[in-house]
Length: 247
Length: 247
DNA sequence: CTTGTTTGATGGTCTTACCACTTTCCAGAC
DNA sequence: GTCTGGAAAGTGGTAAGACCATCAAACAAG
Image 1 (cartoon, chains in turn purple, brown, green, yellow):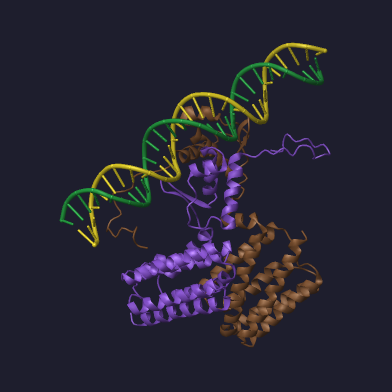
Image 2 (cartoon, rainbow over the protein chains, first blue to last red):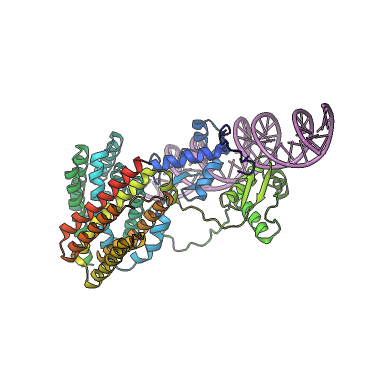
């Protein structure tokens, strides 16, 4: 690109921008993802929407998105939209997945790490949460309460609630990292196909824990948030250990 | 979470091919280049020609060519055609590296995470360290002291010392996690090509920090270990912030 | 020969249209 | 009630044609 440049002493006078539109679009999208405006797992607006919002044509948007896909930042699904990928997945998740298969010791190690990260997240969330994030947490709590009354269990809502707390910590890399951890947890749950916390009693306690964590974050009380989250996770670990020893 | 999973016994019956046209085109072009049909420095046929020859539309050709450009295989010149570049095999940036390069804020986020994990590791190390691990830490400290006297700086020794502490926490998954994060840190240091902690004064302080951390782990005092490690990392972050604001 | 202009080819972008796939929802069957 | 099937809407994939911006080579004027 510099081949036609004169080597004259002055770099002035010729800063006339030349950048492909698709490049500008790609940069804007990257920034949005890096900032956390577009979270991991979320869907990007459709190509047509983006084209309209940015005032460019759809092909330009497409070329930009394909760049991002090639760089492993997003995943394009035909007919299903474009979703933000977890950037840590290839580097952390895949290499270690094998370990988790066999023994439960690894599951405990994993939970240990998760507890460390989540208590910190709860503290940070209490400090930095926005009203929007609070509202989403509230929504998940309502869903869980609804499920509880109907005797239904959906782990994904649980994950969503915890993920929202992590997101409220406002650390993008941390969010991506945590989503890798959750995938592990999800994976280990699946392979052990366990129904550990199925009783009404467990569900009640877990719901109470969630409520207390939410309240602390709502009140912007970092110490309480951390403590409640720790209490919650310690309980989960203990119950799992107990279940584990009897199976 | 298992909703999308088919529990059917056989995955047979659905190998129907699906590949984007642009992908096929890209593969054909790559093959032509690696075969030598298209030599380095030569111009590819124009997009319109390729579209006609392959019987596909121009956008498909464009998307394919842009892929090749992103991979450094060809160079596109507006108005001048597309030429085959040297196959210098320039590495494609990993997604995580794009994040770290995008914004200096991400470096702080990363350091924040590192601080969280390492303070915990120090505590665990104080509780579980073995004599062998202690000896290795001692060895790295000696090397650092030696380097210090000779006015030399080797980040890798620093990393090794920290990694040994992480290993002493005796959590396999955590060790893998942490080594990934160290790679990121290493990369972010490289791209910002910074020489932040180069003065004798900094080196002295950092060495003192390491020594105190080591002592606490040696004495199996988890609280002290965590506190010393936190003090160390807080110092590093603060110095980086200060350096960052002045550059 | 040098300089400036013209002209054609090429990549860049836009518009429009249609196809293929996924998701969602709802009526119908059990 | 749950489950099944299909219609409808939304999304990405591809195609075709047009126009603009840029470069390069041929051309004309000095």
